[in-house]
Image 1 (tube, one colour):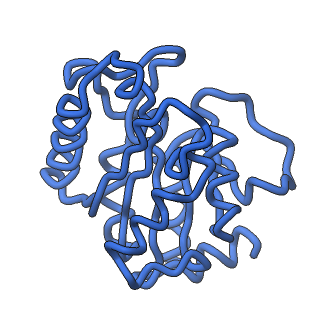
Image 2 (image 1 turned 180 degrees about the horizontal axis):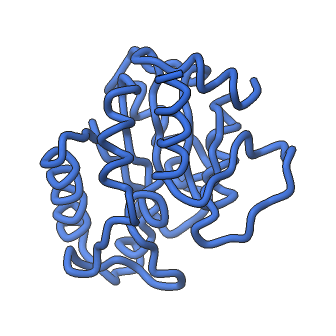
Length: 191
């Protein structure tokens, strides 16, 4: 499915899967967000989430959070960060319907991206989710692999990696930020 085609097709029957760190908030590369004071929304992310909430039927965050499994932070702290993030998004008129976090240390855990466990949990909670009508937005190759394992459309954000040469088997679209991608979708919707 080419880029312009997807932008014309997306509507309330579609689901948006978002990675958290480096997509919704500024990522501390090589470290973890261990409390709310360290959490900073990426530039334009709140406005992007407001726009995307008008376009997508479901919006879920799927995030690897190995710091909990490593004892760097507690699960309660992670839950607090995610709850505050969802509240802040709602305060500006946006929406995140649910946050899924994999706290396992090992890559073999079925919930740890690129494994698909968090997406399968989301479909249990939201049975209307159709992975063929879903978009995965992330800033790592594992996010893209996660999306492609479920035949999702993938959007790579270059917030911590250099852009990839396109076409790429894992990446359908590539942008500098969530805000840049949301603006493109909004423009297509208004066209």
